[in-house]
Image 1 (cartoon, rainbow, N blue to C red):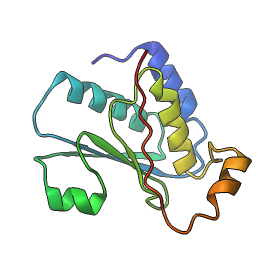
Image 2: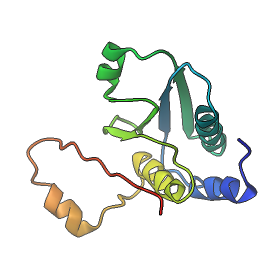
Image 3: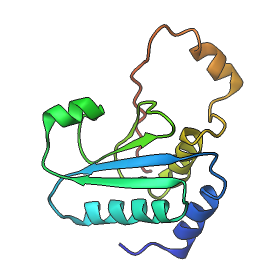
Length: 140
């Protein structure tokens, strides 16, 4: 996959001022496909755009024990961690309309400001334990 200049600029600008380190652990199958090549190319571009981003690629057969330890339910999956693993798991190709949101997630994981409003944070603070939340995006 060849990335456009617009995508490259969006990535570069979106990661220009990361507050700290971010690690992307990309879990994909060992079967080569257009999709896996496109996702890998985008993740390599993201990792190359900032010295704060580290990319680890795990292109292996499904390993249920490992995947359970990592906390993923399917592949391809991207585990996003900052100083600690906050449980962010991204499924799918973070391209197109999703790219800016994905870059925002990286900025937050790196120690930047939360993408949530103060009111949302205040409502979530009293939760007694972590909550599993999935956001599904469908292109229109």
